[in-house]
Image (cartoon, rainbow, N blue to C red; front, side, top):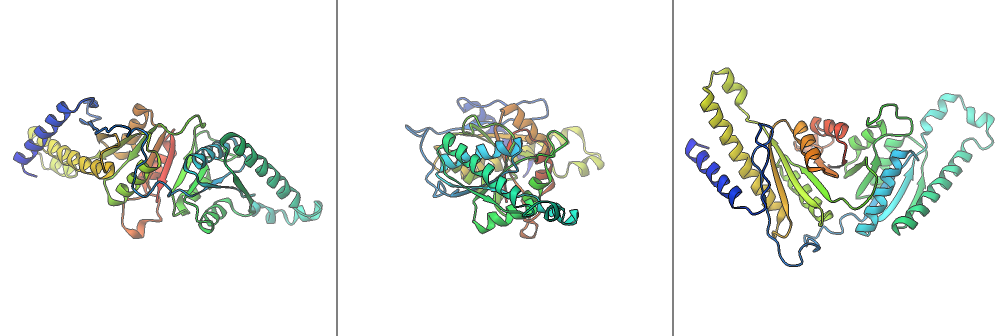
Length: 349
């Protein structure tokens, strides 16, 4: 983009920002660039369902539990979502049987029936949990106990049952560090080729404030459309972090400060235009109110700050925006975010 085009884009953005009623004014202290919200409201649109053929996409939910407090949060949220979406709900408990062989057959030698008693207990606890969900959320949950390695069994069960969503707590019963993501949750994130919801907070209501972190890729657009369809009544915000790509090279070349400022402004204008187009593609017919936040920073601190300032209850991110061969990788940005976020986190594959 040339200088003349860059100035035109900035002037156009200024006019849009000043003309937009109820526009959000972003921070201008260097952390946030100007961002705004454009809405088109129609009578009765507040509670309308988004007609994009995706309202029933979450037909089966799998909630994994080890009976820890963290897992209970996940089970409760799964119950709330199953009720809201009319989805079928599976509860899965995987006793970590991988430890038993190291005991030299200890259970078989000293307990009649080996570990069958513990499995019966697990079935009873899981059935009790399902009954509690039925009373609280009026949903029917199927209980399953499958001995094995938790991460492997959860992902295999989800694939076999064709679950549309896996819901998990962030740490297990033996976690020693508060806030740390447990090994099972990380393994599920790594292996599962389906959306995974990590639950950190108690269920009070349906999600009211949803933050979608986007790299503006086509995969991100598809995930954003699904997010908008799944939570049609929630306030939805898009956050996009950008950096002036060639700034380090220009600094090494001794660029003048005025020219550097102009280059940064042109990059910001380009990013704003791209984010506008992304929002429009997600918004569809214009009934949905969607806020935009453009942040000149690295994605991780940008998303963390946006989550805090917007008081987001759910943050939605993609694992990776790269090529097909990378789709099984949990990208570095996603890894950092799932470790540091305090809100519930939904990861799309």
